[in-house]
Length: 90
Image (tube, rainbow, N blue to C red; front, top):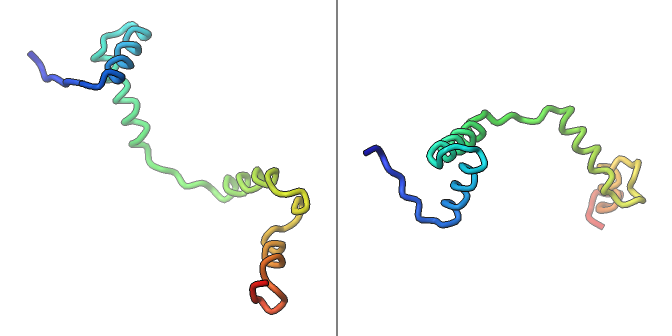
């Protein structure tokens, strides 16, 4: 008799059986592959976004701005809205 894993959660057992049936494999193999795939995804090194990717994300946000702010440089607009000519809050 080999090593055992006793899963007491009904939903987990149901999902494992469904996946095994859909894939035409044993429950053990279905669980092993699912765990291996998840581990492979989580073990991949995290990559930081490039400057170009960040700029593209920022451009995508422009569609959510109020119409009166479209086509404006928001860093200057933001400052003008919040601060007076002396740099104090309005």
